[in-house]
Image 1 (tube, chains in turn red, green):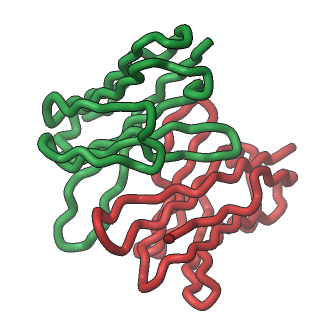
Image 2 (cartoon, chains in turn yellow, red; image 1 turned 90 degrees about the vertical axis):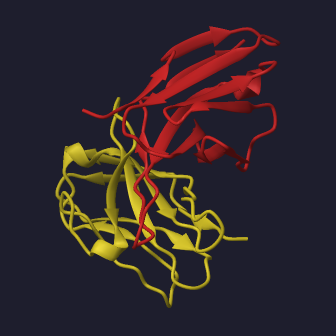
Length: 110
Length: 116
C-alpha cells in the first residue's frame, strides 16, 4: 500500500535555528508531493509543491527519489512558523487524490 | 472571494443522535472531500466526490454517509453518533486539472464535533 510517514509528532526549536520536518513515502514511480500547513485558528492551506521547486516563506523541500523523502527545510526558523505541517503525496494511479501524513507540529520558541 | 464554508462550526451532541455537517463552495470546483482530524492521527479521508454522480469511500467511511446535493454542496451525516467520532471535520474542494495532474485542495474552516 502507498504510505507516507512523518516520524516526528512534535518538533520544538528556538528562533533562528534550522528546521527540518521529515517526510518519507513508499510510492513507486514518480509521485507528486506537497506540503500543507495549518496555522493556529486558520485553515489548512498549501505551502509548496515539489514540481514548482519554489521557496515559500523561506521553506524549501527537495524530492529525493533514492531515499523516497520529501523533507521540508528552513535555515532560520521564525516564531510565526509555528504550525501543523502535513506532507501529502498524490496517488500515482486511480483517482490521484492526496494522501496526508499524520502531521508534525512545529513549535518555534523565542 | 470564492470560498469553502462549513456549518455548523461547533456542535455538541449525544450518543445515538443523527448529525449532519454541511459544506458549500463557491469556487466552482467539481471535486469535494470530507476529512476528520484527530491529534496524532493527522488528516484522514472519510468520503470524496469527483462530481455530483460520483461518491467514493475514503479510508474511514464506517459510521458516516454523504450526499452530494449539487456541485456546490456536499453533506456528511453521522446516522448514530458515537463518542469516538468526536473530532475536527474538514471539507475540501479541488478543481479537475487538465494538462498537468496538479490539483490544489482548498479547505473549509472546520467543524468541531463533540459526541457525549
